[in-house]
Length: 98
Image 1 (cartoon, helix red, strand yellow):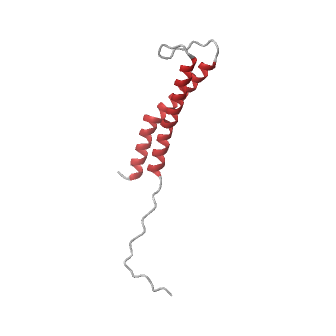
Image 2 (cartoon, one colour):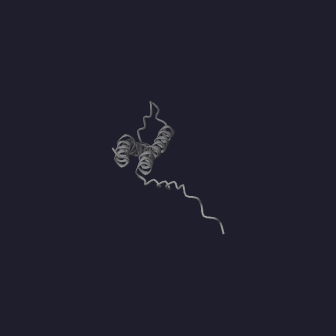
Image 3 (cartoon, helix red, strand yellow):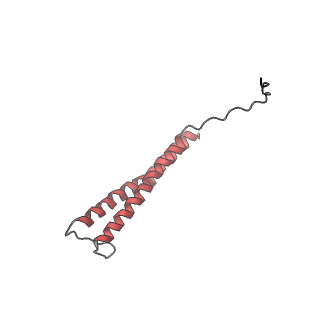
């Protein structure tokens, strides 16, 4: 299996394992932050009805989602980029400096 195939497989796996949960956490975090700002909203965060708890949880999920979404981007970039080719070694002597 060549390096490009391995890169594609790693990118697809990272999208499924990190990118999709990252998008779901982004949606859930945004929903939590917006729900904490609405007056009269029924909030239940681990038994707490405090809007600050929902805001904190939403912000934490938003930060985690950014990390989870960045992982597949980084994997795709590093696995699928063209690496510079090494210069062939030359055993010829250098010409004299003039």
